[in-house]
Length: 236
Image 1: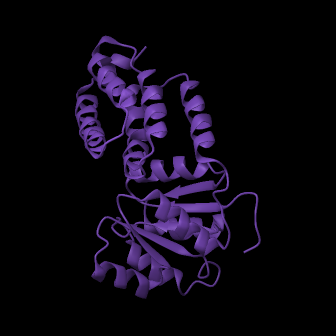
Image 2 (image 1 turned 45 degrees about the vertical axis):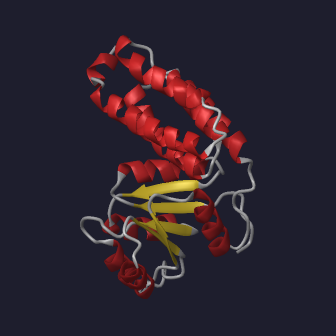
């Protein structure tokens, strides 16, 4: 494929967290993103949006991923668009079923960022991720800080997968910057415990294998505390 200024990506998944995570990740590299929540919408959006690549979940309401792949394969306008299936169950049976239905690649959840980037580059035909990731993250976090009506629970859910993948990729800077950004949202008394946990996450040195286990446990603890926060406390 000829190199383009902006790659168009369609993400089809009924999991809001996955949609938001992929959207956040790819927008850092100037991808143009559209999302759909089921296979029927995905078929329509494929024809109208004309994406360069599609990310597709298998388990969805309405038309599931396998059925959508089968239908896509016989529709001339969209049959050549490459599809990356992302599945929580990437066992041999599901992988073979997806490939037979028309998927180009199958990736497992939770998403491995390096593997995702390599797969997109392979299918598109050139490096789509030339932009420096840490620069993109800093710009993204600055945009988050400048949002006017932000809530800690909402932002934690949005950025939790970035933290999780930063652990997988062993990226302490991304952990520190993301945690620091989330600390800025801890503005009321009920956020105190979460703020302290985020500070621990940010300040860890991450020099030993046990430090990464510590980070995983902290994120689970933060997630538990965030789930207890009463969102009504954030209403102005």
